[in-house]
Amino acid sequence: MAIGAQEAPLPQEQPANGSCPSDVTLTYVQANTDKPDVKIAVSHQPLGLEVFTRVSSRRSKSQSNNVSIMPSLDTPLSTQTNNSDIPAHKLPFQPPDGGIRAWSVCIASLLCNGIIFGTINSSGLIYERIHNELKEKGDETAALKGSLVISLAIGSTFFLSMVAGMLTDRLGIRLTTFIGGAIATAGMFLSSYFHDRVEVLMLTFGLMFGGGSSLAYTPSLVILGHYFKRWMGLVNSLVTAGSIVLPFILPSLLDISLEFTFQVLSGITALLMVCSLIFKPLIPSLPPAETKDEDGNTCIQNCRVFWGQIINYEIWKNKRYVLWTFAISSAQFGYFVPYTHLVKFTKDVLGEETNTQILIQCIGGASGVGRIIFGLMSDRPWVNRIFLQQVSFISIGCLTMLLVVANNFTIFIVIALLMGFFDGCFISLLGPIAFDIVGPSGASQAIGCLLAMCSIPLTAGPAIAGWLYDELDGYTIPFLCAGIPPIVGAIILTFMRCIKTTRLHYNILVCHCTYLHTPHQNSNGALALTFMNCIKPPKDLSHLPSYTASSLQSGDAKQQK
Image 1 (tube, rainbow, N blue to C red):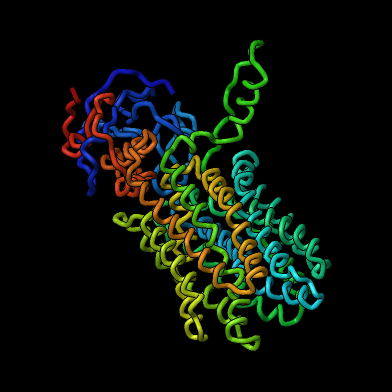
Image 2: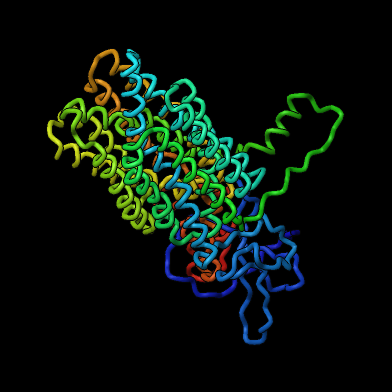
């Protein structure tokens, strides 16, 4: 698309209800199309997507044949014909926000998340069975080895998410999910044959199931942004609530045998491949970067070009994303410790005859309720999603430390319910916050890189707690230490308010300002509302000569001097 440099007065249209910061600026320029009355709003020096556009045509009684080059709200972008000179990947994407296909994708994503995290959240029961079998053989490091099997499964699920994000961008959502489902199914099936050999379980259950789950989990979150925008928080909460089902089924399977449990789980895991067939992406893929083949290119330059086509470096230029990723990964050192060791700790305190299966079911059920409640809350424009994550981290940290003073089953149930409730808050907001910070184009790698950074503390935390249990013969010190990192992560998130707005944020706000003039094309309106609640705009805007948002709202076409 060729865009001229000549600015034109703004169309006289009434803005929709809403407000926009008065210091946000944008420019309306003449588009090079066959319709002279089409104007396109662009921001200065955009980051990420090169141009965020909205169409605004002059509405007069004498002109009734105005043509909008943007898609309408009713039909997704990929299903419409692009009759303009704008490449498809530069058009602002409009999710359908409903329909049979959209809700089918939602259900498929729910199954993926339910299978993967239902197994992980029930890992305490699998750990207990492995630990008991090792103890019967006289292994003095039973807690450490059992913890390593579970830690590797959790860690590899998150560690390979960065690879999953890259593969999603290169191979597509559908193929990446299918490959992940096949690997996870094979790992779970092989685990049934080697259930009594912990070293092999580290490979089959720990690495194969965890790695395959990683390749399926990241695309299952990314695909939601292709179909939903307005109710993104609620949809994510419904999807992640699928993990509450397996904790109710797994105890009955373990009563039969560990081998039978792995066989049944391998059949359930195979559904990941079926779900992948439903994931039809709508957002157009970015074309490969154009590179010039010069004789003077060095090996380092060629490597930069190669990795630049695979890795999205732009998300790491976003300071808010960097700080958010660091805070989340810091909190994960102690996050999964109670999930892994709660069953064993309860039996140590109350006796082996205690029905600890109820605790896992309480965590799963409360987590599902929390995801729905916090998902609904996060969709409100006045709610700060980062603040909700801070509340969940502080609560989980305090509850983990309170486990050491629990001395009856009622207290254990109350703590399990509260931990599950706030866990639902944290899990359900990962996808929406990633979309808020980096936008749809960078969401796949943003989620993948975040989970990859979380893999190290998630792997180390439960394993270190198991080692401390072997050394100290108790869980007091492990649980006290595990409660500190989530609180520290919540404190780090406070500093996100101190980071100045980047140009990417202004591009999104530009879309919101233009949405005030074209309310039927609001692909980034809800996204901008979230940013306006949590960003701090710079005071000096002299380097952005254009129209102010206040003039947009008043309908004036006064240019800044």
